Length: 258
Length: 258
Image (cartoon, rainbow over all chains, first blue to last red; front, side):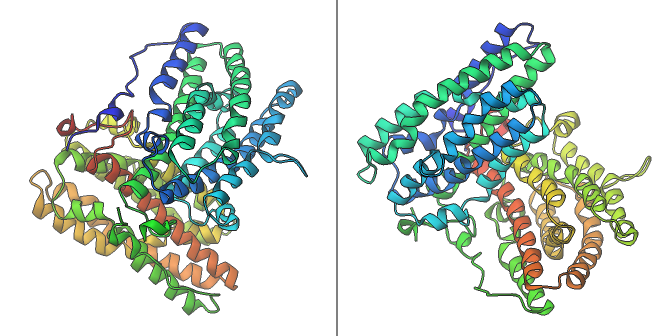
């Protein structure tokens, strides 16, 4: 069997060293254009209405583990900075996801989606049925921002530069194609259309101002590449389990696959 | 599409609490019997001679990252113990893999295999072409022994209780079925036939002596389950990439899949 074509389209152009901020930004945009998970076949199926409800459930269930780890990740990012300005700037990311007593955040909005899809909230939040690959990939992201430099920690959030397109495609595609999805449960993505560009703008300005050497610019690009892999691995695992039908032992089995 | 049958065979019997050491050992053996990666379809293809050389290369390349992380993992395990006896007992695991100046260890033996399969040694040791899923799973194992209790760190090595069967099957199956494999390059597995049972015996005795409460016994079983997932995820990723042909961007592409 030959390699399926879209997977090979991710090849990056050869580079030697990143001499300027402009070269770094161009490289970041190339990584986004070629490696962001909007190219993944699972998303094409999801947005194109080609999945059964059980497969959409599996996606939402696994993605909850990612969503609910983001404020933990961001708390670690904040903890890496001694300068108050960066901590203050980053802080709203935690409340964007966690909300507040009496006001909902991104995690609540995600739970509206999983509940509307027919998944029990306790089961979703327990993460008992997620794929191990999801857990390992998401945990790798959390560990990355703890173990690498603060510059790389910020750079790993740069996938948000490329998020608007996929959110728009997801909102319109899922609303048009699935009768089990409605406007209200797509609230998470609508909110992100506003939040993600603002956050991405800060992160891009930050890495442009703080990556001073070719080595640091390379580290910034590698951090973004790492993050695209974190996202890609999650969709590969969903595809293998729920499209090709190789659900690993212990993971969620949708009713329509029993 | 329905779920492929072998994946559902991993269901564990319901338990309430593990009241005795005997109940814990029975549970550990059930986890091994049902969840160890000898059940994975990729191994059936590998041992049955059903893979092309490029697919065997991909397996050996990715598995090198696992092998070469084991002494790092074991060094962390040692670092978790204040008592000298446990550190002394565990120490030989590092040299089993690392060897010594002038004498080979498990990592050298693995490199003999990858070199014989036609892979460049620098490419293999750089880990540049491995699947991100391999990296995340293996790193999850290294982080597990750092972040969990010392008891869980030891318990996560208990997969070795079940390793002899798979090594024997691998040696005979691969020698019989592939003309690009010979006796010399299977040296890694032959050595493990002696090393693994000795190490597994110590680890089993240790958890039996040190897990005193139902909660601790459950944690021991969960650590083994976690480890079976670490192994399973690696084979799922190999299957998805190199059997189904969905090689993710940036990963090794065998010559016979170009």
